[in-house]
Image (cartoon, rainbow, N blue to C red; front, side):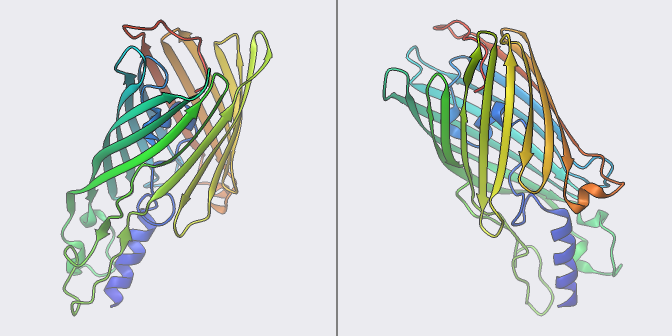
Length: 317
């Protein structure tokens, strides 16, 4: 039983993405990455949109999380009713890495002169790797830490709703509806047969909302909110406020409730090419340590006009 408690402690320390807290990937520039957590967003920009993101969290802390994300989405017919999307996300923290790959499909219904309501579904899977043999062992002969977990597959399905006008958007989604036991009796056994689940994937629920104010002909202001809930953890609130100047330069700030303050900047290099950067400063006890130099995030988005539509004016969502 002591070995089970020891292993539980090790896994809990190195698996915030799979434990009850931060399970799905965390983003500061979530406003450019909606397709990763809401399949109904697919095709909503009216063009083929390809985005790459790299995030390194808690720089200076050994074994800290890092995330690499690649997404693409596009409408597939002239009326923009159908949309397709694809996202590949790789998370690594300590001895654990997980790759998520998801295909999304959406269908959009006009509900007013400017309002559109989209319904989305996604399906895919996760590949989990745990290098248990790289962990420091309290007991060098512990057989439970001798076998790695290699490419353990678990399926994934989800759904979402997304509503938008020219200036407002909101959406609700649950990108992973299947709760998966990552460590169970089939993987770890041998201590009198008494091995219980150590890590379980929980359903993550998202709600996103934002509004764009035309303050001047050359200045737009957008406050936004991302709310995330997973059973067993407090609700997470991400509040952001961004200004866009001349449809080219974006600058703003964000606050992750009780966790971090963030600064963001982006530049629309051409009609189809945009770059963005962000920095997070932790306000938790972890953020006060000399081993934590904050979190950094960079994105690159490339868009191609569709066969049916020209580029739209650069926008926030």
